[in-house]
Length: 308
Image (tube, rainbow, N blue to C red; front, side, top):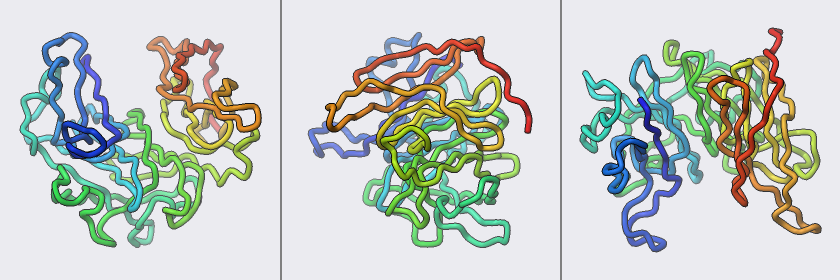
């Protein structure tokens, strides 16, 4: 409906680290409503935590949100709008701070066994069933949202990052799993199917043995679905930084590498790619290099993937 949602990846309270207001909210930005943008209202019904990304289910009206946090690992959330609510320009501003229901997932494997963390999946094609558990206090007044659940109540994941709505569901990224997670990996991409209420593992990156060298990828972050099939993923890992693709079968391949060294010759550092998206006509892939702040446009020719 012509606006966009922006997420605060910081949940400091007023008085912490120089903050004058509570942080950790989602805001709606309307390019045609300057008055609303001068005094933006936090959409508190989406919860207060370290937000990363949000997508809207255009059919059911649900919002899906990711949390990038650890100790304990973060959560994938679903927000159910109040009965009768319809999306549109300015509609979010009509809702109360406690409107709708915010929920976190509880996953089960094919044998009906509870799964505590998405890092448990070690094979592409793994499917987990999902139940949704209500969040007790979405504003985290006394206890952060992700800490309000006892062991066995929800399913977590390390560094939940970008999302993209396509194919009737939400693609979502778990950037990497290290010591904070039951099983180590260097990146996962999942697909949530709201009709089946399942999460399916689409991409799995093994632990990268040498991030300073080209070859393996690590730390997927932003994501988009290519109009030519498969995914395009922005890397935010260790060492070299890439845009890379993933086929429908989960195979990965490089598209571009950031060679702009913002470190030193002895200790090179390469900033992450962000904000990856195709133009509406599908001819140009746009992306950004976060530091020092460069936008790039990548022309094709792009080719539709062959089905395998």
